[in-house]
Length: 252
Image 1 (cartoon, rainbow, N blue to C red):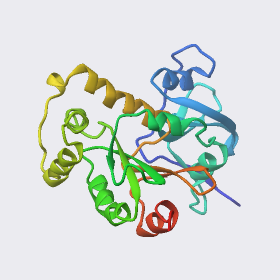
Image 2: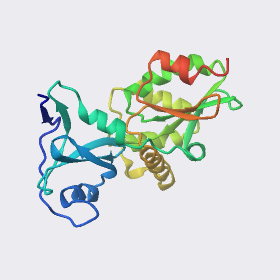
Image 3: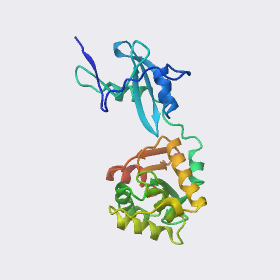
Image 4: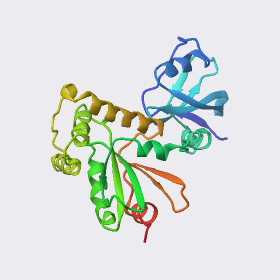
């Protein structure tokens, strides 16, 4: 007989009924805290399943049969299969990238490579992100082939991220300032955001909001168009194959 169990990655969270809204109270309280529910379904064990996103991260949760408590975490069956991953894959809608390219063009970014390049690649980058440093190093040979790489500077990883990102966007030579932060990593170059000019602060925060609106929760994250003009994204550091064969292979 197939056994199904609930295995929770984080501590088991049982929420009593609290808020009044469109969802059962135990779910609504999470919605009030920033969870965006995007689909509901019938889950194993007589549970009601919900999938959504919080701060760009996919989330699965399961309402108990009493309708008053919800479990957040990973559901696995008796064979150890991750059912929650399947639920997210099958039920969570793919982000709508319609119009996203124009939003990327209007964002605050730093350009590397030729300005007249036929191919443009965007990357969300945080100055405190070590994987962003690795990505930039991987990208350099492709820039020499005529690719323009646009770094959309965000501040999400550490308290100093916003000030560092603002310093790059506001620099006379943004690429040089980006290289400075790359050379400092992983040492924590402390910078307070208290003295960041309001215009630069808003540029970074706007980039943060854009990143979240595209359901991107990690840096670096790459967005590009294929030869047919269809948009794609890679969340996290792409491997060499993805860089060479998917992102930067055009133009030859």
